[in-house]
Image (cartoon, rainbow, N blue to C red; front, side, top):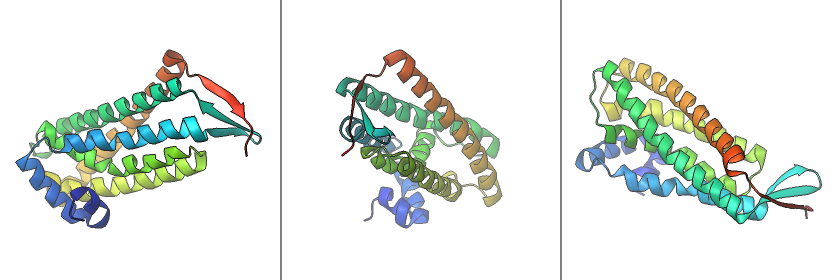
Length: 204
């Protein structure tokens, strides 16, 4: 496939060149992809928590009510989109120290493409098993880091040494932002939305 989205997983160096050209021609071309890809973890988590559920003990499985699962999915979707946009804002702010002047749209687009592995890893939400989710998120995090370090130089047109330092700064800020947003989301869901659990059912 020639789509930059799929080339990120097959030929990432070429994909970043295509993405850079697309950003110059249409600075907001990333937005439909971001809004669509962010649906993957949200929808999968909704399906998984209402149909499969998760096991808290050897003999029981807990599910969410339709209403609570919809709230969780909506909160996850909103948090994901806002998080990517905030990361773009931070990249734009940090770029001032590296002699590059990308637009805000370009920075948000770059953040959205770097987050692509996490979007696809959201498929594991269909079966919310803790070890499976952890493995998928770790793999997605590693490849997202590969995309970041491999793509920043091309996308921002920086020297190799500058790109390495810039990418390290982005990685650190991104990790802090990710933890902050996830903790805030979880606290709000538990304390503000009051999740409703379906009575545990025996495991088959």
